[in-house]
Amino acid sequence: MKRRLRSAPDAVGAVPVRTGTGSYPVLVGLGLLERIPELLCEYAPGHRYALISDDHVASLYAESVVASCTDAGLDAGLFTFPQGEASKTRKQWSILTDALLDAGIRRDGVVVALGGGVTGDLGGFVAATYLRGIPVVQVPTSLVAMIDASVGGKTAVDVRAGKNLVGAFHPPRVVVADPLAIGTLPVHERAQGLAEAIKHGAILDSRYFDDLSEAADGLLAGDARATRAAVLRSVELKARVVTEDEHEEGFRQILNFGHTIGHAIEAASSYSVGHGMAIAAGMILEARLGERLGVTETGTSERLSRALSRFGMGAVPRLDVGIDEILGYMGVDKKARQGRARFVFLRSVGSVRGDDGWSSEAPPAEVSRVVEEALRGGA
Ligand SMILES: NC(=O)c1ccc[n+]([C@@H]2O[C@H](COP(=O)([O-])OP(=O)(O)OC[C@H]3O[C@@H](n4cnc5c(N)ncnc54)[C@H](O)[C@@H]3O)[C@@H](O)[C@H]2O)c1
Ligand SMILES: [Zn+2]
Image: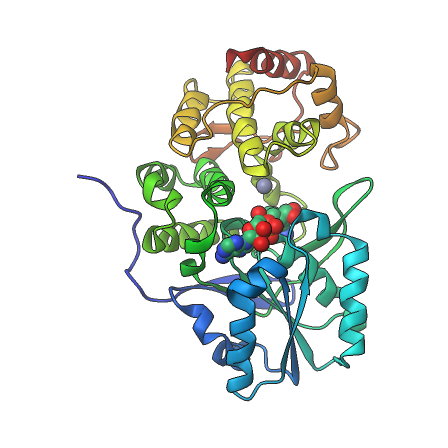
């Protein structure tokens, strides 16, 4: 019999995330978008609400959310920007902050960032800086945003020197995730988020890891109940990590599993390989590196590859770049210390090695060998 992702069928799940200054809940439930006015009143009472959304999500959801807020007697306005990562800039931040100033939003205003991770990061950064900081409510509508970006309080824009390099920690008052919204998300965008979910299973919960692979078809098809269960479990796991280490000083590093090689693949491909696909390859290769170094159980990389293949991400993408270029990108990874790449190693699926810190360096020759074999098509 097929196993299902476990959870109570339709109840709203509420996962608390504790921060240095308090705590906020992540609400996960089918149909929550229709309850936004009531939830805003409950969790983020304000005089005016500035809904920030990209133009695509605006026409799908934000316009009707603003209308329902207005119907409920709230003073709500919509502020949109062009969809896509290219909008996560200081320029777009200045356009939005000027628009909020022109609209007369004051310190009793609240930003509602409704959209994917770009909206969450950009809208969150607007809220973090506007009049030295006003509250933000995160309403993630993509799987990346529900599973990853909306939890943890990180906000940022991209700059010439790299992605996410200018930003702030600005925890939301509440996160409202409605898995029904995933129904309109294209399948390749769903896969991006599911790669992060598999990462959560790989680092913390082997049962969840197996459940995800079992549920792969439904998750890729956007099945709302399977999505709800996955979002809830991923949020629980990520919340546990960020509660323990809000400002990325130690334990939070485990969320970077697969990201050292993954970021290098993304950058070396000039971002033609999506983040999910790149970190999927990163996880497979970093597990292989761990196996080579004798710190990761033999067969872990193979198990990752099998699970990821259910989501169409089981192979390392072919890249027309040299090994030096990829290694070069690892050297400039902002998480590197003293110019050397650091890796999170699994002990086995569901468990991270933390013997001497949560990440460690690896001999460059071994890193180079693993990446080179993959580039030659041996992966
Ligand atoms: N702050 C963090 O901790 C954190 C973590 C992970 C990722 N991120 C950031 O998140 C961003 C990636 O997020 P993303 O993949 O959601 O990007 P995105 O916000 O650009 O969304 C991807 C695309 O999906 C569309 N979309 C969103 N929801 C939809 C829906 N329900 N139906 C149809 N289309 C929808 C968007 O319009 C966009 O075109 C990156 O900028 C990344 O740096 C941040
Ligand atoms: Zn990631």
